[in-house]
Length: 196
Image (cartoon, rainbow, N blue to C red; front, side, top):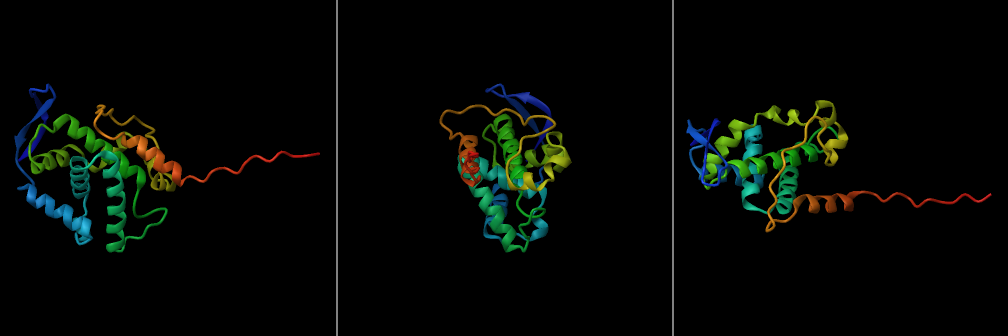
């Protein structure tokens, strides 16, 4: 089942609710196979599409706390790239900012549209909602396509990503991410006083 996100109705939780339309993904089992093949590095490269990226992010956002999901996504994408011969260079391979921005958008999607429906229904909806160019509503191409953005998180320069609801039971993934980034940064050399 797919969701028509153009025509929201209201649920008991007063969040927008989407109306069913034609389905792209038939079963949650079909999607779980896609995720397993990706994680095993056996998903054919031509099947690692924008939709597949969103489905993997959706799976991780539903299955894990945010900090763990980010760690798993990062390592899985790098492992998949290695398995399929995609080089990790300053211009190819894993892209930190794109991964984190899309994960954020998928989490926001879940906050708005996850009312207990199936993985397949959510996957259809997220794929229908987010075209490949959605990220460019938040980032200019010039900012996003830099080696710096590929290597580490950078903030959007066009418009902020949507705010996420605070859940006290959930790890603060951004705090964990900032701590991880801090471990990767090289500390500046201490200042040396010049003596005359």
